Structures are given as C-alpha cells and as structure tokens.
Image (cartoon, rainbow, N blue to C red; front, side):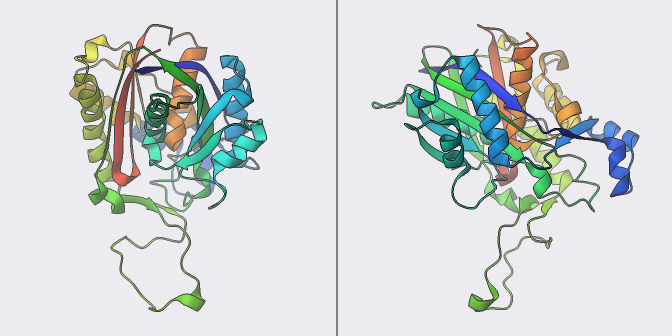
Length: 328
C-alpha cells in the first residue's frame, strides 16, 4: 500500500539573515559561507513559535488538499525544537486548526524527521482501523539552539515549517529507516539539567562533549562523512525493495544540510545534480522541515508533477537516516 499526497503547505518566518549579517556575531563573510555550504540566506524566527509556523503550514496544506480539519484522524509533528517539553506541538496544532477528531503526537528523528513521519503515517493508514487522512507537520525553530559564537554551526541553520495531508492509495511506495546510535555524541543539543536540589552526584561523565546548555554541538567532519554515505545508502536500500534504480527517479529531494554533501552523495549514486531539488541556498538547514519545504517548493514551481517518482532522503542527529521512494 502506498500513499497519496493530497496537498502541501509551508511557512517561513518574516526575518531573513544574509551571510554578511553574521559578521555581527562571528568572524566570517559571504564568500566563506557560500563556498563551503552553498547557503546564501536563511529565515530566522523572531516572534514566531514553532507551533505557529506548523499551524500556518498545516492550514495551507489542508486548503490545497480540500480537506476539512475535522476530517483529519491523526497529526504527526516532526521537530527537534518544540516550544514546550509538554504538551506536544502536535496537540497544540490540533486545537489551533480545529482538528477535533485527530489523535496527535510528536516525533523526533532530527533531520530525518519528515521521512520517518511520512513512513509512520503510511503505517497508520495501512492499519485495519486507519484514519482517512493523516496530517504530517514538520516545524523547526533551529535558531533557538544555535550558538552564535560558533561560526562552524550558526551559519548553517534556518527556521521554517511545511506540512502534508496524506491518504492511502495504491501508488508506488517503498521505504527504509535506519539509525546509528554510536554517532549520538557527534551532533546533539542538551535538554534541561537536573535541579540542584535533587542532584546526588556533583559530576557524571556521559561521554558527550562539553557545550553550553541547549546549544548545538556538531563534529562537522564526522557528520559530513556519515551524511555522504547515508544518502546513497538510504536510497539504494529503499529503491532495492521494489527493483528501482536512480534512473527511475524523476526528482531526488534530500535533506538540505550542505550542498557539498549533496554533490558528493550524488556522485556516489551516479546521479546528475540536475535531478536534485535544492533550496538550502535560501532556506539553509531547517532540520526536519527541509525536505517538505523543498518538496512543496518543487510542486509550487511546477517541477514536481503528478505521476513522477520521487526519492526523499533524510539524514541527521541520532545518527538517523532514511529514504522513501514514492509516486507523486
């Protein structure tokens, strides 16, 4: 059983930070960032909470799909930057859009989140008591955990949200999800520390490098090596299940982390960059929102058309990775 993407929507914040704006925070410039990452500008959430961005994208997706909020049976939100530890962002969005009949939960698979979320939606739709429609929302405010003193990481990330309304169908669908937890310590941001009043030990070495609370840590070289291997691996394992190859794919839509990662992975796949949809130049790395933002932009520009075969490929902290082959 496959899925049909009925409609998509997106939202990006009003505030734009160009490369030269980072001169105010760190020793960098436009040429240094552009040549190493392919990023020119990114959106940064000022007043916009992650749930608000997700809500706005969700409403746009519902309108495109012609589906009423009360017809949604399940909401899956993917995020690494929720506004609250509890309640879930999905529950807030459920109320805000009026999806009174939907179950709701958040899913954290880092930058692979949309791939994980879409695959999870398909599995719910395949169940005996499946909902008619599932809403997958990916919303990230990565600027909330960026260390603006670290020029290696703060220049990479942007904020935004995208959403998809999906239903079951007999269209082509294949997926592969993976994780390598041995790499957990090379890309992370800590949660809250235990309260002083209840700490029994003054120190505990968990093996994670030192970093200010909530700030993102990234071992760039190790993450680059992982990503350039994970992208082709995830595609080949998903495509191999249904006997497809790179030549059967109309569009590759990978996680938008760094153009060098995508170029290296494309070379390993033997696929031409002309078949890759790239949006990181104007959105930066928006974590789990990057794939649906790119997919939605491809649809709006008329690049992605009905009947085409798409490869959605995610990789990120965890270290997680995954690929989906589907027919749009």
